[in-house]
Amino acid sequence: MQTTDITNKRTRVVLIAILGLLTAIGPFSIDMYLPGFPAMATDLHTSINTISYSLSSFFIGLCIGQLISGPLLDRYGRKRPLIIGLVIYIAASIGCVLVRTPEALIVLRFIQALGCCVSMVAPRAITRDLFPLQDNAKVLSLLILLLGVSPILAPTFGSYVVAYYQWQDVFVILALIAAATLAAVIFRFRESRAPDASVSLKPRPILNAFGGVLKNPQFFTYAFAGGVSFAGLFAYLSGSPFLFMEYFGVSKTAYGAIFAVIAAGLIGSSQLNAVLLKKYSSEQLVTASILLQTIIGFVLLAGITTGVLGLYGTIAVIFLLFCTLGISSPNTAALSILPFSKEAGSASALLGALQMGLGALAAALTGVFANRTPAPLAIIITASGLLALIILLAGQRRVKQLPQAEAAAETISEQAEEEACVMV
Image (cartoon, rainbow, N blue to C red; front, top):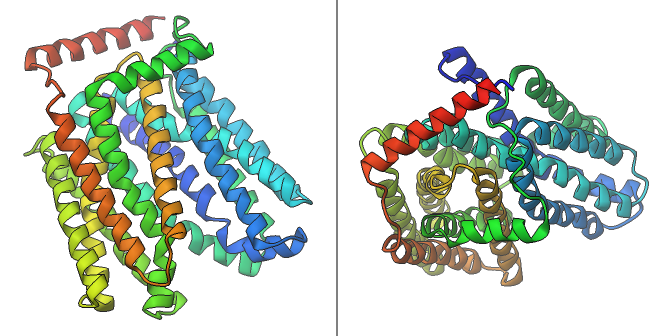
């Protein structure tokens, strides 16, 4: 079996482009069909609330699917599960075009998520497989760029599709995006890690593998600190329509512009992270960024509850908050997976499931505690930063840094494994 050789610059560019496509499928699947809820409710003779259950079923599918896809990626390599997952996703997307009942839509969205989750887990595992340890966070920064852009583009694009065509066409477009990605995976991606028959797919070994990953102090510390920190973003996504369009009274067009400006903080800082890594370690950047996130969170809370910030002040503070997330997220992800080689797929899956679960919890809490003021949103955002900082500072005491010689030995060992894969 041949494996990807990333020493060639063109190959690296193609590989990162494929990883980017895989990364973008998830956000587009979540956000692109949201503008079509009213039309879907009318066509399927139900309420918008019932249609929203299709979004809940998608999140449930992502959480479950990521935990399943991790062991599959470790057992069968990266390419085969990706192909199967994308085929499932395409079939479910076509099914969504043909649905006649809301119940069918809810079930198909769950199946769609099971196919989609492989594309969410695999990029982190492939990055760990192929790129030198010091480049992991840099590549993840590029993927964070797409994660920042996709939620902005998806609802806007979806609204135009629904306005000028039919809501079913959203799923047609999603199927076409997945089909293009599938072709790229089949024809342009060479396996990054050989299948490993020693990886068991039985429930007990899988749970033991996840348990082993969780017991690693470095994974536990950075995965939970990063997940709790990033939960503030999910809370913002859930509460921002009320905050800007109802509380501050801006128009839908203005809200879109505000959303884009604030998201630019996440995008720009994620790219700045690659520059900062030339001078600072990932550990230093994580500590500094989460500390700043906590401080900015308290500023937001105080400014909103007292009314001092106003519209433009709130935009500026949330912009700065997103800048800290753009730096902390790629570094916490890279540090979480760093201790693992054989279990990189399982570690990546568990990392994704934790982030999705914590984010969904933060978004739900924003709705549960809604009281027609922006205070609950500000409290949850502030709490996410503070709790992440506590987890980080407590966990860093237990994390043992690898001596430089051991890190070099690990890199040499990984290169030898890759050469063995090529020979197979």
